[in-house]
Amino acid sequence: QAVSSFLNDNSSLDYAADDILIAGGARPLIYATFKALVDPSDNVLFPVPSWNNNHYCHLAEANQIFVETKAENNFMPTAAELKPHISTASLIALCSPLNPTGTAFTKDGLKEICELVIEENKKRGAGEKPLYILYDQIYWALTYGETKHYDPVSLFPELKDYTIFVDGLSKAFAGTGVRVGWAFGPRFIIDKMKSILGHVGAWAPKAEQVATAKYLSSQEVYQPYLTNFRIQLQQRLDAYYDGFISLKKEGFNVDAIAPQAAIYLTVKLNLIGKTTEEGKKLATTPDITKYILDDGKIALVPFSAFGASEDSVWYRLSVGTTSMPDIDGLISNLRNSLMKLS
Ligand SMILES: Cc1ncc(COP(=O)(O)O)c(C=O)c1O
Image 1 (cartoon, protein in one colour):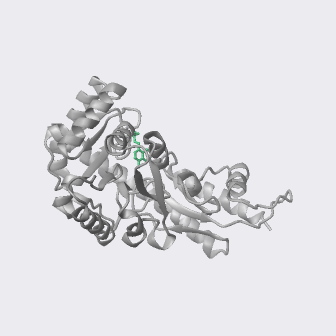
Image 2 (tube, rainbow, N blue to C red):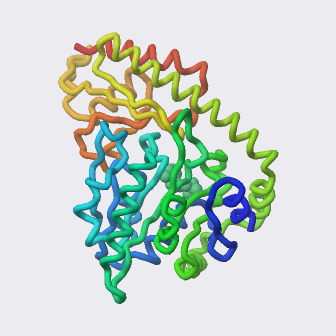
Image 3 (tube, rainbow, N blue to C red):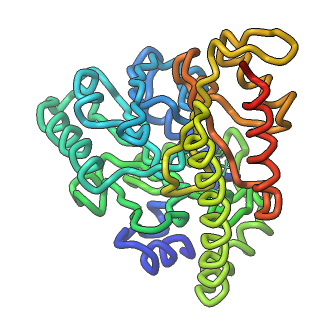
């Protein structure tokens, strides 16, 4: 009931309590969506880099079909990239704002993908399995500047029959340890997910549910918190972005995509072929990752860890655990490490 009111208060989404499932975080809900909708060897379509879709496909014994997204599209998938695979898919797993990129769908970008799904479902016969969208919007409350969050159902109400949303406390409310997430969608699918998770035992503990219901019903408490949290995250993201852009201007082979959302910055470290002071050649992305970690004491996660190709030199920088005073020091550590390379 509290999530239903929260959605009414903060979006144009209208879901009754019976269309919503609460669980121990977003993860069990993603698992339940896969288990409810995907039969073994069904095709599941998703963009890479993205978070954990490969693992959920593995657990559901699905056939993974992934499309590698491009820097020029802020690493968000386009309708043109997805189109060739739509006709054979049972599920398309989308996430916006996206982990690991910190970027989000534009209105037109998402609209075009939604139109593909609508068109595809019109083509499928009565006995055929429709194409569903898993829409993970767990970072939706963390957008910056001009960036706005969009979702399939607000854009196209007819997609309500085909969309399962996933959200929770973990990210925007920095409550990873609290373990409360929610999914909402067509009631007959939510009911199946409920049965699956009932047997897994992945419900959220009662005390956390009561506390979350109280919290989500207190706009006067969470709105000021969110406003302040967004300001802090944006400051950190902007500071890292500015740092990377100044290194780029100094002539180092690095780059970054302007932050739009979530707690991540997309950065590029194209150091392939460089040689360290000890004479070691950086020949692969893992070589770069290790050098930056050992020498610069900076832990970045390569996009290959999120399904992108092994030779991608793009990385996720998370600002979840850094604070403003650390940032200048980290950028200067990175500058020193870059200067030592020949
Ligand atoms: C896109 C996305 N969805 C879901 C989750 C999992 O959230 P939870 O901690 O609520 O299980 C994460 C966590 O990293 C995430 O990045």
